[in-house]
Image (tube, rainbow, N blue to C red; front, top):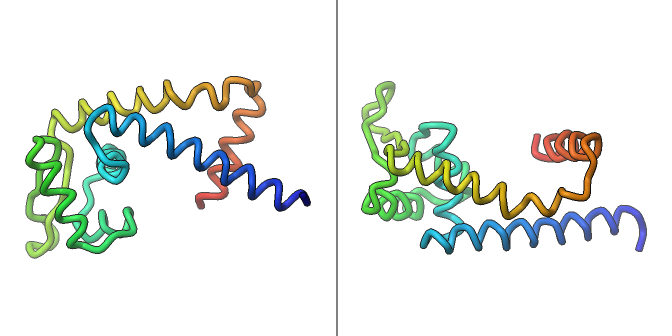
Length: 135
């Protein structure tokens, strides 16, 4: 296997492992992986529905259903956007924020073994490289 192929293969393998861990955490809280993503996105921002759809790579009708289900569970709320009365912003409720913090801690715990064998310098370098890939 050539070096670029090895990098891509390892990246795919890491991706599969990360998705398995995320799916495990989500399922333990009766969430889908996409619902977990919604809570993660809302943890750091209060987007308009259209912006949330863009973050998720989904159409607005799919996002509307996700938000409806989360609202029924008391995890999110909607309110009219101050800058555009036709738009709706989505945010975490206090219960949703608590769950998002809990999920973040659980994800950190289940994924920690993946980087446990790395020294501090390697972990820092990995963080930089992953950040570049996401930019």
